[in-house]
Image 1 (cartoon, rainbow, N blue to C red):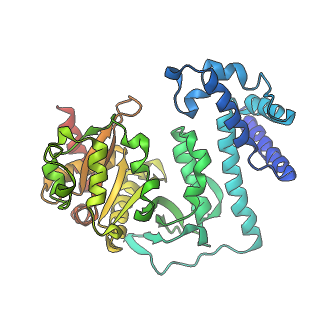
Image 2 (spheres, rainbow, N blue to C red):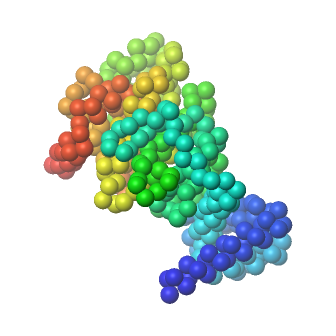
Length: 396
């Protein structure tokens, strides 16, 4: 039964793609969803408005989608919407699967025109056994192909990264807002971790992260309005932070220097502006880990270590970071306790965004200290530190 449903979904997506190609209307689902969203929002009370996934699951949405045609859209849109709801049960899920189809189709179509490029980068670093990491200055220009857990065929690096981002952030975490911003994952500087396997021509992509340039600070997720709201709680003392930001003192008034009297937003922005050499800082977003479940923790360890080393080696001393993976948070907390004179991560603020107990943290990764911390820890001691810190926190 599940297989027949999957086949039906695949056939629908294929037919939809052919229709969009024939009509040159590649943004059909995006247009349909944005139009429906506007209608839903107009009928929702302010207190009922949430993220895209929430809004499309409200009673108001179920009364409209697939049941009432939209006067401002062609009749064909409503037919497609009805079929999408019947086959997928949700317009957002349908669009997610359509984006996955397009990504795989793009690379496999390109693959038919040429052989898989397996040229090895001269910039790769071996981190452990047959695992390698590197920084790619612009993945949009990269012609190498990589295997992923989510496609039978190898994909161009940019497509492989977008695919993993879709599966990780949209399918698993329901961050449907990212559907309109997938292009961000297909270009620019990225960190990648990959593994060569004996039976494949292309390496397996294990981890990736988008590196945000200091020149585009206004576009950083770290400084987005949502992450600068007053809902974020301070996590560190001014004295601790100011010891790593010597110019910070001159940017804040004597009253503000008491952390309770300066907002998180004011402090974090002052930290950024206090750094004279902006080339030494960057942001990191869309950090992903993939692989077999039994190897996820190991891959997390390798990716954290590789990312810190790669950025430190290229002169990025500080990473403005948003992290919520418990293993990452616990390891940094443990290392901060072990060596408080060389903390790998300065926590600035935190928030339980979805009120689930999973706390999201913001802060600065000091790449020199982080590299040193990972040099002192093999995978076994990495896990020991995480477990010890978790037990310590559970006792409180």
